[in-house]
Length: 262
Image (tube, rainbow, N blue to C red):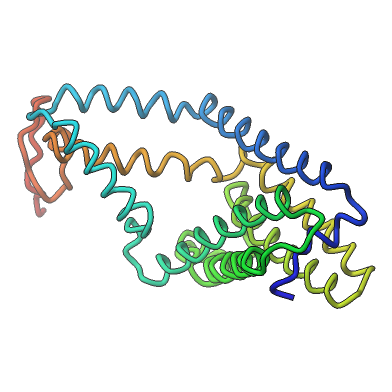
């Protein structure tokens, strides 16, 4: 099953052009949802305004070469390894989900656009299945065991809010994709059709729900991490307030005093 291209079997019922158009529509939904998210929440506006404020507080000029090195290091460390997560379990779950999703999406595009009606090199369908499995492992691990906000507030794992739409639809897409591939390989037409429909619907929820989910958040995090390290390099990071236990005189004329015991 792992080396079988599920989209080749599907092409007997759904035309390759229809599959490719569906992928393009999902991309457009992602772009549209992200743009709406930026307009409504004004994240990008805040990002650039904050960057300008921090820039004015810089104490040294950072050469272009050093900036490039900082950006590359941030992408290789903070982004590629999810360094912002201190807990090992949460970090591993996030990495499984992140890389599993990337592998799943990239291999899907390759199979749909390059091998929609023919047997693909075994590496591509294998990556498609492995990516889906990794996404499920990371997603289910996070959902049932690592949801800090739910556990700390004493809420059940079944508590769902709009922000959970991304994780749930992402895991559902991978799960239904695997089940569709399995039952298609097993020759069960009824179950194969059922899980294919669910696979399509979960994709629509995933990419169509960008505006309401945390999907767009993954585009902001790299930019915020880069800005943080650049501000540390030019000295403007000191412009930000220190923790409450570190009294310091700031440029705004505010001095934080030691806590008093009464």
